[in-house]
Length: 468
Ligand SMILES: Cc1cc2nc3c(=O)[nH]c(=O)nc-3n(C[C@H](O)[C@H](O)[C@H](O)COP(=O)(O)OP(=O)(O)OC[C@H]3O[C@@H](n4cnc5c(N)ncnc54)[C@H](O)[C@@H]3O)c2cc1C
Image (cartoon, rainbow, N blue to C red):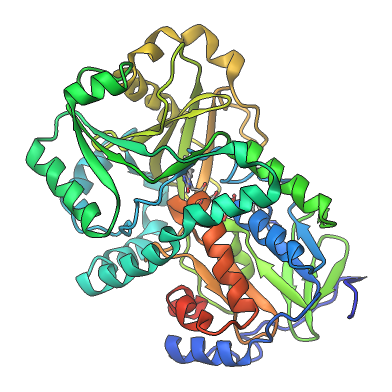
């Protein structure tokens, strides 16, 4: 086995320069699968990105006996995986491209603090994504994408349970369900929503106001109905979970270098270029979330990934709900965590470089107060219990607020894929469900890397070449 070697950075040609890009996505996927050099025992692997996707990938590969080097200039779990809502949302099997969104869009877009916003300066840059996104609303695409998502979500909780048991941090995972609450929506619509989920095999029960008040007395009396998703889960802290996985990775002998990859070259074997050195490797997995675009496009592939920015606000009320509570109308979620009650959500298209709009995070507080009245008296404690984060460099950030960029592709499916370059793999684009899908998606990637029977067919909907 050739060890991971370190050598001065050199210039290499891109895949595009080598003329490797073919026209037909399906043909490219088949070709990539046939050409991929699958991983063999104890081969070295470099993993780019230490978000939850990169961490789980690195842990599982290291556990299989491959020496793994994990790279991330921001440190461990400091991107989108730092402050998410912690919800293992296995009920969310429907792709984001929902035709029901279209009539609501103008209303959403007129309110810069509403559930969905596009920053005016970013509008034209976001247009190509929206054209592709609307195309994915066609029934044939929506059905195919639902099936593919379902494949990853159905095994997501057992895969996490196995992972946290292996990593020795089962205490950070809880599976007691979650609520989707309704305030103004009439019962016929609640029933329709429930039927759509139940039709996809999601275990649920509709609760009325009386049942809600007796089971969850802290919930506002304005909540008239809720769907209780019985088999979903949550982590008690995404941050602590990332740290626990990292400790396990190190304990197994994994190596971490706090540096960013500037370029991947492929012409003289696989090589990652850092600021001051280049590292050759036999296998390479790109897990850089929304920032994967630059690395992937340098190689000559298209990656129409968008940053769906979301916000959280940490609070510390005297009582918290015992399970995650999402609001159908307000499009936000409250999750009880070790650090307090996290209010999270909203979608903003503002690219990766425009400054955050912290008013969007603070608006979450109004929604929280309305759904969980104990919050209204929790003001004094909030800042003292806020989550310290290096996730954003914006000095105007209020101490209790955070923002993150969900890595989203127009079809809502992640990329779990090899390519024409032997040993080069991609694991990215898990949209609103990166925490939920991390363990099941990694399992599929490892099956693909090991060339297990049936893996190529299971991973076909997630191939990188679908955008070419
Ligand atoms: C408000 C909010 C709430 C959410 N709630 C949930 C939820 O309840 N449940 C759920 O399942 N999901 C949720 N999500 C989505 C989830 O957080 C993401 O899908 C997930 O974190 C993506 O993980 P990732 O590892 O792909 O990306 P990231 O966590 O962003 O990690 C990518 C890493 O790559 C590193 N990187 C980038 N470029 C380079 C480079 N060139 N070299 C080296 N490293 C690099 C970055 O520094 C970063 O650490 C939420 C997201 C938001 C914003």
